[in-house]
Each structure stands twice: as C-alpha cells, then as structure tokens.
Image (tube, rainbow, N blue to C red; front, side, top):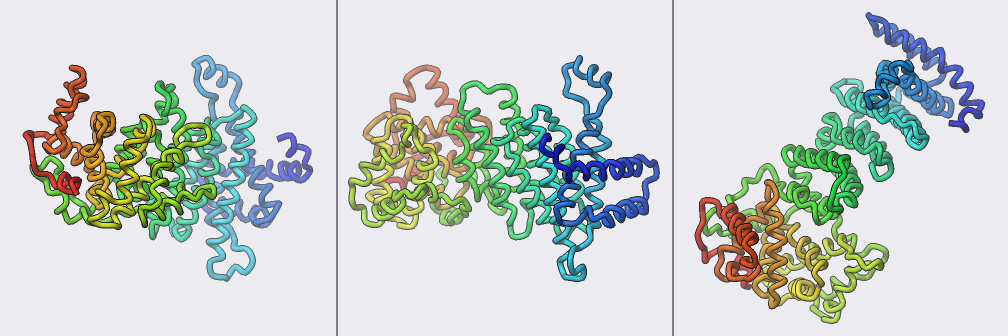
Length: 536
C-alpha cells in the first residue's frame, strides 16, 4: 500500500471517492430507499467518468473496494477486545460491504455502452468488462491484504458470494450475460485457488460449490462450463493431495477433505455425467490412499442408464446392451505419455501396432520412474488407459496373446511392490458403470489373476479390489462384478489361496466382504460372463 500512497493519481482519486462513498452510504442507510436516489447517484458517477474503461475508471474501482474494506474493519476497540477475549475472529462491519455489493450490481446493470451505444452487443460487452474490472480490483485488494498479514477472508467471501447470488439471479438485464458472468468468476477463482492462497481455501471451496455458481456453470448451454469446473476441482484435489497422503490429517485438512467429499456427493447426485466424463483427470489428482473419494467419482453413471443388479446369479455381463458402448472421456489421457517432449507415446504406439521390438516392454518399467526415484503416477494412469483403449479397438483378439496384454503381464510380473500396486490401481480406476472399458479392464484384471505365477501378484490384485469394497458405499458397479466373479468362479480357485487364510482377522475380513458382495445370492457359480472372456 506504500506505493499507492505516494502515487499522486491514487491520492487524488481517494480524495474524490471519499465524499462519494459517504454519499452512497447515506443513500443505503435511508429506511425507504428508492430507484430515483440510485439513478441520481449513478448519474453522478457517469458524469464524472468513473465508469469508463480507462485508467481513471480502474483507479476508481480499486479505491472504491479499498474504502469499503477499510470501513468494514473499522470496529470500536471495545468490540475488538470483547471478541479477542472469546478467542473469536476479528469482528466485521457488514454494512459497507453490502453497500459496495449493491453499488457494483447497479453499476453493472446500468453501465453505459462505450463508443457507439446503438451497436448491437455494446451494452452486454460493457457490463462484462465492468464486472471483470471489479473482480480484478477486489482481487488486487485481497492479494495485498493476504500478504500484509492483515487478511480478513470473511470480508472478501461476503463480497464474492453476494455478487455470485445477485449477478446470477433471474434478471432481464443480466440474463443475456450469465455465461460471461460465470466465466469471469471462474477466472477469479482460478487465480485465487488454494495452492496459491492456502488461508483462503475454506472460503474458496464454499464459493466454488455455491448454489448460484457450480450448478449454473454445469448447466450452461453446450456444456461449455464443464472444462472450467473440472479445472477448479482438479486444483482443489492437487492442493489436498500432499496433505491427504499423510497418515494423520490435521483438523483443518480433515474439514476441507470432508467439504470436498460433500461437493462430490452433490455432483454424484445432480451431475453424474460430469464425474463420468472427467473421471480420469480427477483420479489423476487424488492420492492412491483416498479410496472413498475415488469411489464417489467412479460410482457415477449416466442418469438415463439403469444399472443391472451386480448380485444377480449368473449375470451375463457380456450380453448387456450397454457393455459394448464406449464411455465418453473428456480428459486428455494420452497427454502424459508425450509430456516434456517424451517419445514414449510414439514408441508405445509402434509396439501396440506390431508387438515389436519386445525390448520396449522389458524397458518400460524403468520409464515409469521419475528422476527422483518415485513413480510417475499420472504416467502410469495414462499408459494403462491408452493401452487398454488400443486393446478394445483390437476387438476379440485384444486380450490374451496381444500387444496390450504383453504390456500388462510384463508390468504385473516385473514391477516392484509399490509400482505394481499403482499399476493395478490404474486398472481398477476403469471399473465403473457398464461400458466396454469396464468390461475390458475387468477381464484384464481377472486374466492377470488367473495367469499369475506369483502369489504376490494375486494378493495385490485382491488387495486393490478389497480395499475399495471395505470403505463406505457407494461402490462402483464394475468393481463389484469383478470381485464377485473372482470369488464365485471356481476357475480362479480364490478360496484356496494362502493369503485368504493367513490370519484369523484376514479370514474374517474376506468372509465379511464375500457375504456383503454376494448379498442374498450366496453360493458358488461356475458361470460368469466375465470369466468366459478372461479365458480368451
């Protein structure tokens, strides 16, 4: 703020804004406010050139936000002391913030079109420009306060949430620009995401999930708001990721995590197709140990689909009409394979086409490890889905004795414990609602189990499935049918495996999960469409 105080132009603007602000506060404090008073005040702003898109207009908006925020923090010392004694946050005077919110709303609704006022679209363009400038001015104040150590996030939350509500409420003046309004808020929220401003994380998540923002963004025509919302959620998951990877969560992180789960539950109920289409990007950003969060995403299925009961005896999965349909995946899942100029995608595609040279498969495991020695999880996820998609394209010949299965079997047998766990999780991430990806990857997992020559591979496959089933529901449909097939089909000889009987508590766990999965349809089943395909 020191730089602004020595800037003569800003100092002059503060002198000009001070009486205007007092006048506006007086208008807002009147018991019977009138449109006439609003119009008169707006006319004075227009006449003074304060609403123009120029340097003077920018300074006006910045100083206006500054005046409201300063006034909101101007509380009597007695009130501050009383709150401090109770251990609460610094008190806030809401009247100046609400006055600023109302003024900005009126300014946007009544802003004059610059240039040729009769030009088509001039008025909406001026409205969007003004909103963008207001948000930029507020963001500038927020960043300054954040780094100064005197950050009152409730003040900024109040302004942003009020504008979200007012500017997205039904209004003939604002309805034509609603998509642009939502986009402007998206840009602001991206600039303020938790990775950059951790202390604003709770307010940020509340704003992103606001009922006047998230649903309206996802309901925009042509689903144009979907990639914008996806970017915001991925930002949240990436911020949480290092904290959630730890064994113990701090109280704030636990609360933020619960908030993220609630957002996912809302999306699962109201916008399941959104979770379906971006499942890859979301799972990419979520740590492997966040099983319930991942299950919420993978349990989503299109609203026009009726899921077959996975507990139906002898369910013929390959005869379901939906099982041959490809899912829509809007994430660019192959991007990680060519990131940073890597030739991995080119080499991979060449091998998938010819199964040559086999040395590529032998060396592949080393390419999944970063320079720091840790596994590149996004690369593993991308590799699995890309190879699987290629296998599905090969049709009936795409499972046993194929280039995709060469890769899958080599990774399953040769990767060390941690790498194999991440690889198997990447496969399990594709066990979702009935579609050809779910069917293919379920067959892959069962094939790897049946063909494994090392009990440790079978044990890890079982672990990946079971740990996703022992958390609270919902459980993905494809996960259920895969595990049911594994424990019911005699071909897999599941119950004779040593790891199912290695300890009493483990034995009880498997029996409990088996009872839960088989529900009332207990009993052995020698059929199973998945098993038939896995034997190809």
